[in-house]
Image (tube, rainbow, N blue to C red; front, side, top):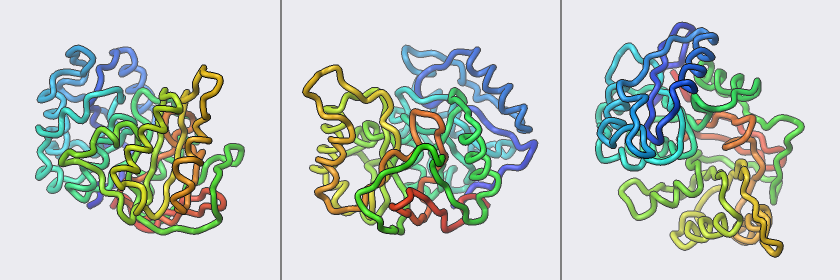
Length: 303
């Protein structure tokens, strides 16, 4: 299922499924989006605070449910990540999402919702910048291409000065799933566990030391989530360093844990907690050129 492509004057609904956000950040983000030519509608519970969450679980889920049901809302934009999206899952009305497909955008902790809405509702969702993100020129141009012009195939490439790396020169076809590495691990052994068989798996993370990246990848290996992938696409692992002198680097962990699988692996793609943060459609059928890190969308991602 596809959401309708955005046009100028479309209304974007703001929701906070995870951690709470400061009002001044919301105000700044609204100003930016309005200058792009879009209208804004705020979720009823957008500025709530419940500990480190943006309201209790039912409040945060109700904003998602209401935005999908509201015919005046053309797209749902998460304002930030943090933690808490996984707690909303029991309260989200998936049947209403199936009946009212819309563009849904976020990343990081929002990985939970991106993949659940694709797997349970067959809705293509978007892994990309949120309201509190830094919108570089490359980030915003790529995002607008996806949500406004993504009714036709198009190509996504990292900027020429930010080269990707790979263990091969293959070209791989498959459906893209995934997102934040640690969040994907938190979904294992739940009804929302990600399916990776014959998929191209996207992984990124932030603020995790190399041994933790090792732990997460090992958990996915032991859960048989990596062995049957078509390919693995790695984004940015921002601030994932260690002060320990004998620590592996993240790149060394990647090579040690993933290369023995004999799968195509592309890494250093510009997506995740860095700038630019390019927008990738979760659930879309893509062609991944490992040699140059180029992604071609082979089907419409909006209608």
